[in-house]
Length: 611
Image 1: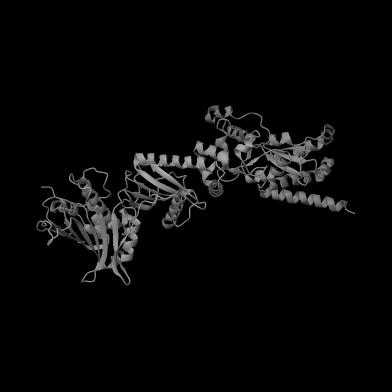
Image 2: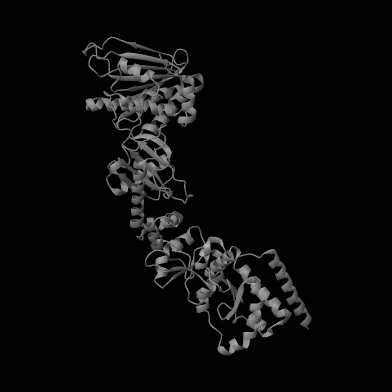
């Protein structure tokens, strides 16, 4: 005959506490879940049945701490107790009489009871089933893996002299000496409130009040976002107070959440300060029992600007019932909730309200992050978020009213040309901050938008050209300057622009840089890619940088008059390297040496001609 597996209960408890559950504290949630499921099963047969759970603590004659969890549920027969309490992993959901496959139940009775051994040395269960003619049973299990099950006489019919034994169950957990603190009254009140405050039944904990003795403290209350309030303002204040209690912050506002198809309802609270992406962990309930206070996956990753409290009657928990199972239902729910957040943002942020202004000021980075992948939010960002421009803070939609949206990819590039562009009446957007360049790239592919990166050609068109006579006068000096900067792949042009205190600026041409890189790759590996790079690379590429000399600056005019020689060479080199530093690019070691050498030449020339 085949042999049965032998289960090491101590090993199972260690497995639960170290690898399934987050810690011993979940034993109380499991016991409360068992009581909730028992009440639910009884009310399916008798909707008028009482629905109470009572928790009390104490110390027995041997000095061991105990906790009683008493419910008015359907109770257990001897056969059910033998099956559910003595079989590891057996679930009351599988029992045809208790509702096979029913979604009304939260937990698994056998596993839930086993979890109590994380803190218990002994567990006692006294129960009376609601079934007619049922006998009261007593089950006692020990942490060494043994148990006893006894059955009493049928309970008598109620009479004034002898009231009937109440239907339901009492579970007594007797703690190990090292786990007695988990059964302290204050700890039980805190855990029971955290796990069960939203349960639809009457749940109370027995506490001692100085001067009045023991009394029952009810821990359950209406679901805050489903309760009735006299006005929207009163509801907002109540929800803000609830947020302060559970999350510890006063929200900027709240967003109602609801997905009836998956039985989800809740509220998202807007954080009053910016947080890093990926920080969104939320408080999730299943059938109004707390699943976890740091649950991920219920909202999209980009929704890190809110903290949500959500209850679901359908979403499936993991084996530990502390996270949600990643399945198609959760995916559909997450998408639906994400759409609701986007609808709120589109409706609210396009209005000029104090909440909209505060949200944009605080969470503009979150909106930029969402716009990386979502076209609806990309359009919203372009419409409502202010960007730094040469005309001051403006939205991209406002910039687009004047023509192309021209941007720089780095803050340094923007700083370099801002004064010149402003003086020339050219609007340029600073896209050098996090996410901004990607926003620009994605917006350039949206219908109806003309978005491109600033090039040397842009400023070349708006800077004032010298007169023909002046061009002829300085032509030789310009040719000589271009030859000097050929090794730096830098062209030289002369224009007039304000302010006069800026003698030169350095412009980059990203298109030419890209084509030059392709040419270099093609020349380095002529047979690679089967000539594919030839389709993108061109034979003639303009220089990737342009040094624009300001003919309005006296130092430039004096230098151009020199036309050649050591001083001219040193002056052009100094202006080029100064423009590189003004662009924020920094100097290479060889460039730093070249700048020092050029300054030396200029200093020698100055000292040699001084009176």
